[in-house]
Amino acid sequence: MTEFLTTRQLQEILHVDRTTIYRMADDGRIPALKVGSQWRFPRRSIEGWLQTQSPVGATVDETPQTNGSDLSKLLPAECVQRIQDVFAEMLGVMLVVTDLQGEPALQVSHPCGLFALAEKSPAARRQCRQEWAALANQPSLQPTLMQGHLGLLYTRGLVRVGSEIKAMLVVGGIAPQQWPPSSQQVARLTELLDAPEAVVRRALAEVYTLTPEAQQNVLAYVQRIADIIAHIMTERNVLFTKLNHIAELSRI
Image 1 (cartoon, rainbow, N blue to C red):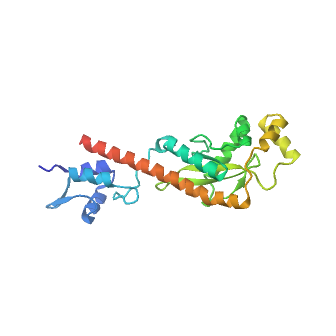
Image 2 (image 1 turned 90 degrees about the horizontal axis):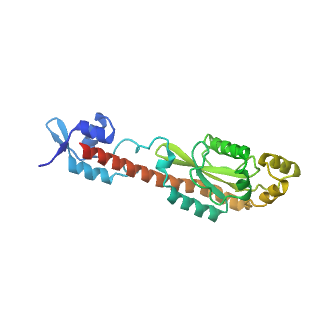
Image 3 (image 1 turned 135 degrees about the horizontal axis):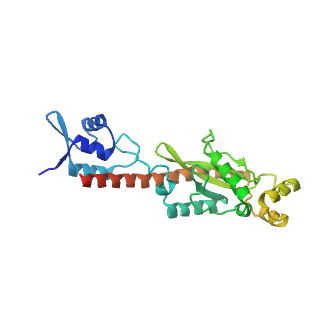
């Protein structure tokens, strides 16, 4: 004998209102039978339908639910770390996925010597995170190179899950056209980094010098790489959403 779900039970599983359920049934977008004036939903058909949904062709009129603002739940760290490492080496720059507060979610790939030295200084590290956090509030969606407190160029791509920006892909470690810095600037960096001048000068030589063409290549790729990471995070989120729906269905 076929087991049916009620409209209320389906609402609890899909997290949508009654009107949406009726509209989906009328449109044929969800398995349903009409008995008199009431809709009934075959349990097995609904289970099969849930397993076929995807973020692009999803029938439910809602973006798949994210797990709050916890980036670690959305980000498959080992997988994305490998992608980040490969692209950093390919482009010859430093790459890292950060949250919207500028805190790295993964290990920094291909860090330059000056960045590595700055990470040892609390003041320089704090300024770096503040600069990265400011990237999330930039009005322009198009990546552009900017100069940071260390004198190096950096930019970002935005990582979107559904309609929300969940993370950033930060690119850095790039020397500007005028490099190395002047003696005055070296003195400022020596004070900021709280390191001997000889150590600072050695770190200044361990940055990434790109041709103008290579810099444009970085700008062309950064959002594309961010989109790849966004796709992986979205697929992971959809999988968790499906599993939650199936778990709720099994409890009915």
